[in-house]
Length: 213
Image (cartoon, rainbow, N blue to C red; front, side, top):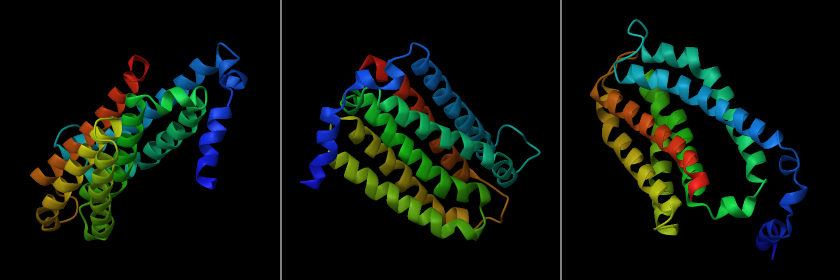
């Protein structure tokens, strides 16, 4: 019975009483902050991804770029769920049935796990992050498989395929990455950076199409 209580609460929930729906400026303002959070986090994350790909700030190693942008990325990623939850409760039933929203949330979760395990280790290269990266890859594989089975034809299913690919690539690339000294990078690092870029692009497109699904 306890399992159904959150569902019953949402069914009884009245969006018309929600503050974001009672003021013409509140919802757009929350959207602006939400998008600004994405811009800050994805922008700073992509600085590191570009270094893994061998482009961008050529005088700075990926490990240094990661150190310089870490706090800004975290600040943006904290803004995203806070404002996201506020927007979600403006019409929770609509969002729960929106495939683009479900895809966005699933890929966002995958991208954050990938960012703080596999990609972080790729940028640092040193052995200290190997365990976290391996755990992150395993989580992506198992989580992706679960999402794909649970929602084969929906947004979660598509996101599950992305997680399986990201985790599988990371596991396949780990041996060649371990052979490199800290601060260096090569084809394996470039591919991990490219996967990160694709995941965050998918998050952005998932958000863009919420209004059209």
